[in-house]
Image (cartoon, rainbow, N blue to C red; front, side, top):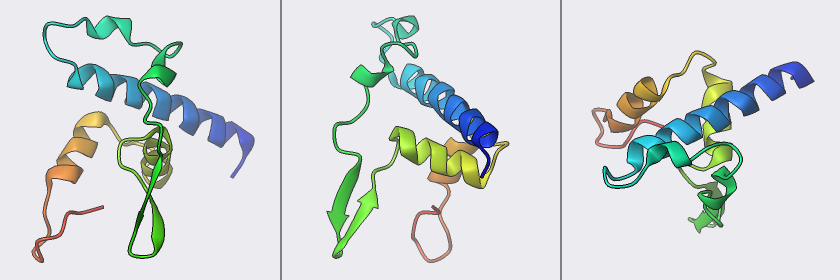
Length: 95
């Protein structure tokens, strides 16, 4: 992957992460205070978890957003939320 594409994906992931954080803030707090300069305060400390003898990427971390955007460059926050809420016939969540 070229450096230009990587940069574009990282920028888009940061913006999507900020938008997601703003959508998750309670009504009493100001969502506009969250920006790219202080987003590191809201990032989870642990980006991975250990399960079934494997290290797995935690959902809704910055790298997770990058991975989702890399798979689908036209992804929006609404599409992502729909995808995460959709279930397959087997009862497992769609990744």
